[in-house]
Image (cartoon, rainbow, N blue to C red; front, side, top):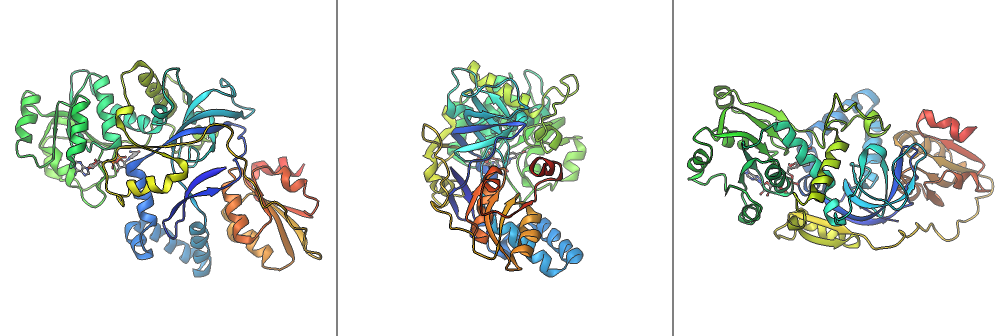
Length: 476
Ligand SMILES: NC(=O)c1ccc[n+]([C@@H]2O[C@H](COP(=O)([O-])OP(=O)(O)OC[C@H]3O[C@@H](n4cnc5c(N)ncnc54)[C@H](O)[C@@H]3O)[C@@H](O)[C@H]2O)c1
């Protein structure tokens, strides 16, 4: 199957071939029909990889600190190898898609092969023809909702969680700063929730789009008449909440700009990647409350929820990330939201690199929603090299199951370094990491099915380098 990846060394985005991922016990396999590029996040990710090594280091001092820690603990050579291993692996992109269920893991209920589902999750809902999605990261797509609109599911849940953090009541006025992809969805959600919206952006075209979608006032942040307009729209009190949906990594200026427009004790919710440089006096005087908005809501970054499918009781956590995804689908179905007006570009997945050129501004154009589309029918099977050569006589034919950091960085180099092994095949659940290792060490094939190495008559020994709790399944 085809999958969009980025080379972390060169920054190049390209379409790679990889085996289909395996069906997760606790998830489903989905054939993608459309996926959405997350403009702000993907611009940051793709842009970082395109920087020089020094540029990367300056942009991510946190990673530099991690590397230095590794040098101190494990030595320079080991740290160098670890960094090389990370850089050598192609990085998947995308985390919001819609498609049709191809297969269902044995621990999943309530879904059938052929159902349409909208899916979320970095590392899961990639721009790929086939994706493996854990049970808490997909929801059904209601009839009447177009695939292309359902592909917005993750961004919808992100905006929805931000709005919930603002905790505003019917009739309140909110200031949305940044009317890009997240900001425009936020505007529509606020309108659906009965809130009045004042929107700010630097680009006139974004302001125009917001005007078409019911914003009360749309202006640039430095509009000299803005303070008077905000006062007039809020009976002189100022806005009840601010939703910061702009990215501003290098400056905390948005915090300074918005304080003057807030009412006493308003809430400022940080959705965008904004430098947390907060002018103390302005925030103290009005006792403004600052809240972070983390991804799609509760459940995010909790492996028990996301990987192992444990839900939170609704009485304690009403709006989990999956319930936010479902609420977004329901609003699409009701007609309260319209994603068609936000889709500025569509590209077949084969032209993903062009789409990313738009995202990083290489091709300057007005962009909001960029959707990748996928051809109909079964995703083409990954075709390994037509004829794997026979094992080199005198060497041990090796099969590797699991292509994680330890296998890549320690185990496999140590074994192949002896010169006594001929690596036949590499298997990993997600397929892509097996394919990357296969290419690096010159194995004969990669797959997501462990049966492939067990059935290979030229395999004399199998290395099982998956998580500990899965070893017995392969050994017994
Ligand atoms: N909280 C989360 O979990 C989460 C999830 C996804 C995205 N994000 C972040 O949200 C931000 C927005 O993402 P997006 O996809 O909408 O990006 P986008 O590029 O589509 O939109 C950003 C918009 O902000 C505008 N802008 C920039 N600086 C501004 C300023 N000072 N005042 C007013 N407008 C300004 C830009 O003109 C642009 O229209 C990014 O920083 C992204 O990383 C956060």
